[in-house]
Image (cartoon, rainbow, N blue to C red; front, side, top):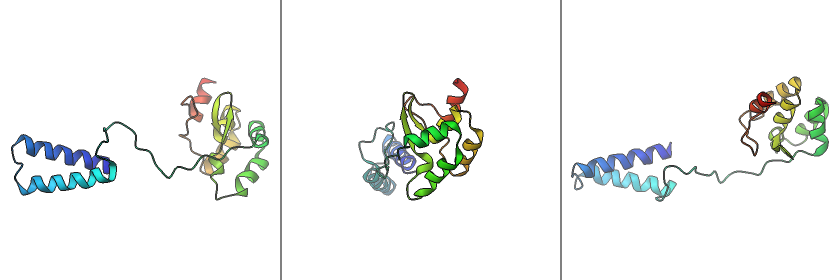
Length: 144
């Protein structure tokens, strides 16, 4: 939303400059609003670069025994591990494999464990998470 507003202010300012209305109150107001938006986003933002969220916490790593249980469809240990610490986002934990960083949902999906996939989704697993190759759980199942 802030980016959209920045672009609107830039466009309005440019239109006023094109119409040679740089001495109007409206122009001064647009310049002020543009300056405020640039202060929040950054005056050098190029309009293309994805702005990073500074509140990102590193993902939780899946222990090997949980990865193995996920692949086998052994629901009890997986759910027990996820429930052990609700402060961590364990339902979206990742495991480093030869296929890249796979989430528990992706591991369950490629191992064809529909019951576990369903439970992970109900617990809030991120269906849009992409591994190092840019693949989601759905795309991994399709190319399998």
